[in-house]
Amino acid sequence: MADFALLGEGLALDLANTLVREHGAAVDLLARRGAAAAWCAAHADALPGGRVPAAGLAALRDAVHETLDAAARRRRPDAAALALVDASAAAVRPKLRATPHGPVVAWTGPRAGGARALGAIARDAQAVLADPHAEVRACANPDCVLLFVARDGRRRFCTTAICSNRVRQARHRARHRAGTSA
Image (cartoon, rainbow, N blue to C red):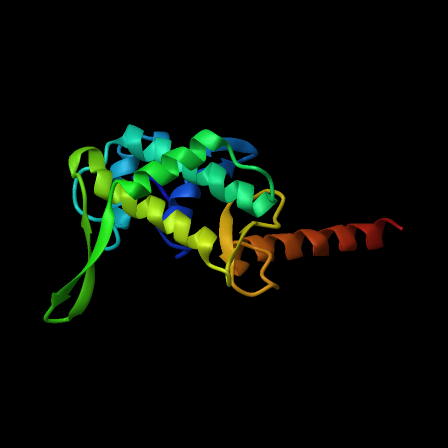
């Protein structure tokens, strides 16, 4: 089973963040055997049912990552990536259903090829980009490639427990080395 950076940012960002850097090298966490199924299992509570083929999940991940990364870096996204996100989102429709425990979102649309799950992810990407109170950002740690949503203008790191701490430690070590070598 693969280890994923699940930052609690939602389906789209959690999927985009399966492209990481380990020891300076780019790594596709979905390329590992069984990783796509493991990622879907980790998000089972938010994904509509149905099997999602690994290739379909990876293709949508690439498109979502390109789209969100373009937003974070304020650049023009690839047109094919936007088209895939839009097509995936358009293939499904959320519909509220009443349950004894309150309303829930049910997804309508084709089931084949994991279309409902892929559509839910694509719609989440659209919602992130449409939220006027959220800004997609790239982590300020130069060794990190993760994306996150900053709902307050001060957030610079994907997580304070890891990336922010590592940058502070590196700064401290650099100051300490500079102070002892003088």
